Image: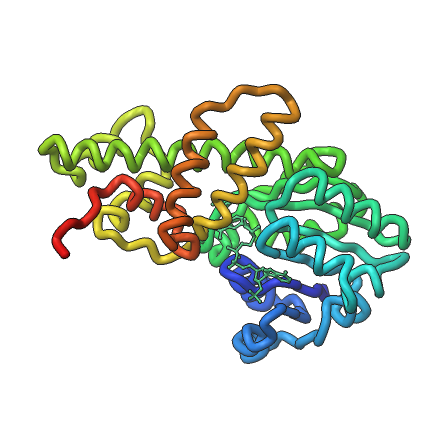
Length: 291
Ligand SMILES: NC(=O)C1=CN([C@@H]2O[C@H](COP(=O)(O)OP(=O)(O)OC[C@H]3O[C@@H](n4cnc5c(N)ncnc54)[C@H](OP(=O)(O)O)[C@@H]3O)[C@@H](O)[C@H]2O)C=CC1
Ligand SMILES: O=CC(=O)O
């Protein structure tokens, strides 16, 4: 199967590498074109523009940072819309809001193409290991056609109905995750400041009802102040912001998510946006008055 891939950030690189490893022919494009080189070494071809990739491939996947990137790659000059048409499918796996996804869907369909939104749960490691959870919605025939690619990228795929449903599902999931990360950071900090060993807290948490892979994976590196990015904090804050807007639309009070969003904003203001989202832990540390 031949696929195009737009966006080779943390996720896109891992996902397209995975497709190559499983025998897919992959044509890649990235805004910073030099990031294509490593994929080319592993057998990928390069498309000079999103339009060139769409022209070449029957199916194209996108994995871009945010709504503005997702829209730009479709609507701007040399974008997806210039070459999409009958018989071509576009699958946007970026995390965006339902409105953005619907705009893209309508534009693609108006040109005769078919569209799926398919954001994913799971981070850098699950992307490398083909263990993502794929939340697809939109054209069911396209979904059925790209299942072989989803089977390589993920451990489970859902088709959630009409476009917008997957965007919403993904935002709900990440709203919960961002709130949990803040509670976890506060717990680690409180343990340390009140004279407990935070490592022992990790062991205790892992044995009880609130044990989860995120605490287990992130806890030890957070205690070492290691925030090497798997899921960049700026993207988690974008997801909190979009989830809060969804809450606003639906008149759902979300005081915990709102507080978590403020903490992620504070972290961004401290210059931590490109680090892992667990770096929100740093917002709780005492200022250093030593200098
Ligand atoms: N990392 C993770 O754990 C997960 C991330 N996600 C979601 O997946 C998406 C990608 O995340 P991730 O790979 O981590 O992000 P990165 O920041 O690593 O990569 C972002 C990608 O978007 C591209 N991009 C940004 N702005 C534009 C633009 N205006 N036009 C064209 N391309 C642009 C970047 O290109 P360039 O290289 O030129 O900057 C890069 O390819 C996000 O929506 C994120 O929320 C979902 C699940 C897990
Ligand atoms: O969106 C991030 C994730 O880990 O899922």
